[in-house]
Length: 329
Image (tube, rainbow, N blue to C red; front, side, top):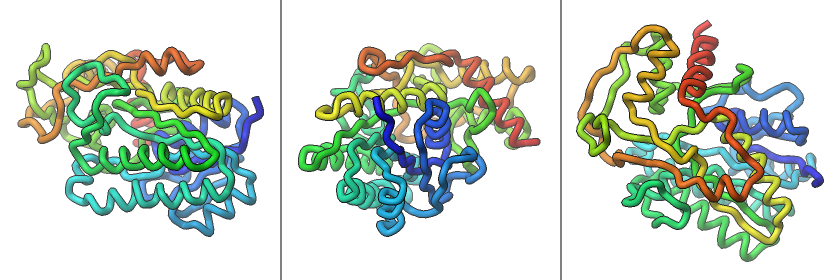
């Protein structure tokens, strides 16, 4: 299989930077575009061309595609904080949907053959059936999920009209850090449980808030499906290989391990990794948090040449804590 040059949008961000590492480790030619609103230039490895700017800047994107002979795009750029999307919906539609439209136009005019899109389990909203399978109803309950679903729909319609295929990978809860310590989660003000907990473990926060202890789950706290970011990055490389091998077909699939852990189980793992307990503060439920979100991942396992390497909560938390300690010096 010939490997086209890949443009990674948002490649200085958390998940995008791990995809860049996975591509580079596997011998692909990679370039990154990132406006650094959430990303960090330092996690882009040496030898990878970096362009500072927005995916909505057509002159810049057109020149990257032409000058580097880009044949595929991995699209991670966008805004990702659910509560913020409720407060600033127009920002999210602008940054996630409108900017993606501009990127797609550039891709079509530039002759791009494959687009892999960073989507989310938020497209399902609060599903009634768990585990969630790919053909479950798409009923997002916040502007973040809706903006991602709109982009999926644009890709579907555009791929029917123009000569490219696409994949949409719907993530559940992404956590951990590169096992070699090359990248990890850096964004300030994170709302992700494991990031918040390891920040508390190294003294950056006084406690971890547990939102809701009265859910219909075994210990009363929400259950989520956590996937190690490096396993997720490997799934992106496998999905791109699949798109190249199946140019007439598109791909939409969940990315998770197919099993859930409660908030308290995750915090127990953080305590084990840290050696001392992290302070927990019980809070009321947050609006819009479904009791359980677990990926039906049969399609992922059956379609792609992919098997998880790090599907253990102690490994996920351990890598996240190692990275957080590195950031703390």
